[in-house]
Image 1 (cartoon, rainbow, N blue to C red):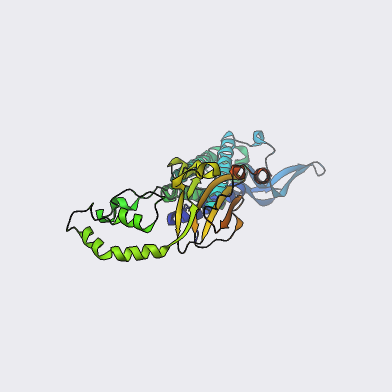
Image 2: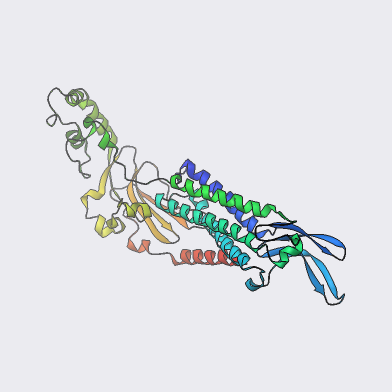
Amino acid sequence: MQRTGLTWIGYWWVILSGLSSLCLLSGFYVPHWIIGQISLNGRFYTVYLSAFRRCNFPVFDQELLQFRIVNECGTYEDLAHIPSIYWQFSMLTMACASFLSLLLMFILIPACCLDNILNKQTAVLIGLVQVMSAVSISVGCILFPMGWDTQEVRDSCGTNADKFLLGDCELGWAYIILLVGAGLMLVCGALSVCGARSFRQKSWYNNQDAILQPCRQLKRDSFDAQALINNNLFIEDRPVGSVHSHLVRHSRQMVLLLLCSTVNGLECYFCRHSLRNKDVSEQIDQNPECMSFEMFSLQNFSRRGCSSREAYCVSRVVNLNGYFLEVARDCDENCKPMCTETGYGLGYTECTRCCTSDLCNNFDGRDYFLPNMVSSLVCGVTVIWVLLILNL
């Protein structure tokens, strides 16, 4: 299973965010906020009202010279035709909150599949935006009852209708769904604190027993068996009679045989350079020389000997939407030269090249890491297409 930037709480966070967005969008668009009745020509018709839409409304028929009921739903012609200024502000705040909730889902859904979408900081930022959306919906729900004193509401709910008094009407399910969506969005804002993983460079040996720590600093270019033994199992640097000295005396020959059997003589370039946000912010794997053969070929520490199982020298390059994201060079046991694309709406491409001779993984010069304008253009057109659909 591919590792992502989400914790198990993060997956519940994404699910609840989707449910709350669905509640907000459906509750905002469906005009079943108020359910009332209107009497016309001796008949009663059920009407539905919201801050910017209504269903079953009366119009004046020029041919019949009388009012009749149009049994369909429609919006007001423009903002000025909305009968109450409170409804105007209610519609604007809820529209912004619903759009933000939908926009956040375009970030959260890919985060369930990719590991470079969210980190701890961006998750908290998304949570703050969700809290702002919930507050905006709540403000809109409070402003809406302040416009119940208009003539349009009194025609449907009776003369007793006033601010925060519905008269003969009742609240519809869409208004209740909005309140539920706002509550779920507040819960999502709280879950965002624990929704993403904290990426930190791990140094596991710092908290372990001193026996496990090397006595001497090990250089990357000294991967022969005797050097490994001298640097990690040398007796002179330990007190006589210590536990470490006892372990060395009984295991030195065994370790020598093991190390000799795991070195096959293949040597490969060994480096990694990453432009992922978490790596750049924490200064992890920041080796720009790895992008240029002229640079990393001159560095002795950027090469290592492979084990007996590692039969390939590998070069991997990752691009996101046509822009360079990461390059890695190392030994590997298995290698299949290919390029794979993953992601939903994202051009996440990983290309792998293989070879079997010493220091042969020097593929992909600096020109390879220039932006792919075709991928960038496709991504931009996709974003514009999505925005046009939302505007429609």
